[in-house]
Length: 232
Image (cartoon, rainbow, N blue to C red; front, side, top):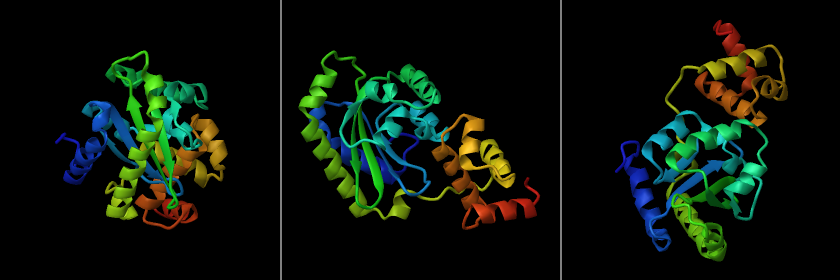
C-alpha cells in the first residue's frame, strides 16, 4: 500500500487493477468528481506517489486540460486533442510538471452518469509506444466497459459523502482569501477569474471552500461572516 493511500483506496486500487489486467500493467488514473458540487475529486491511480501528492495538494484537476476536456466530451480522446483544445495557458504548467514523471502522452475514456458524477479513466503511454493510440482505439469498447463496470461498483458501494469527504482544514488559503476579498468588494466571478488568470470554475471552487470553512450556507453568508470577523 502506498504511503498516501487509505485502506479503502488501497482496496479500490487493487480491485480496479484486476479489471485492467488485460492491459498488461499499464499506468492509469481513475478520476471521479461531482459536476454540480465543488468537491475534492477521488483519484485511484498507480502513477508515481510524488506526482499524485503534488497533483492533489495543488488542485491541479482544476486546470488539467485532460479533465477539462473530458467534462465537455462523451467520446474517448487522446491527450494531444485535449492540449489542442485547452482554454488556459495554465494547462501547460500541469503537463510541464507531469513530464518529469513520464506522464504526458495518453488516452482518456469518459463517463457521465445519472447522479451528476463525472468519471475519467486515463491510460498513460509511459513506454512511448508508437502504436499506442491505435491500440486504444481498437480496444476502446473493452476499456470503456471496464470504466463503466468499476464506476457502477464504486457508486454502489460508497455514498456521495463517502466518495467526497469534507476537508478538515478550516484555515483559508492565500488564494481563497484573495477570491473572498474581491467577492466582498462586489466583483463578479468572471471578473475575479480574469484578474487571477484562472477559470470561473476555479473561482467557484475556492469560494465553495470558503463557504465550507466558514460554516455557512452560501457565498452571501460567507461575505457577511468574513466582514463580521474582520477577515477582510
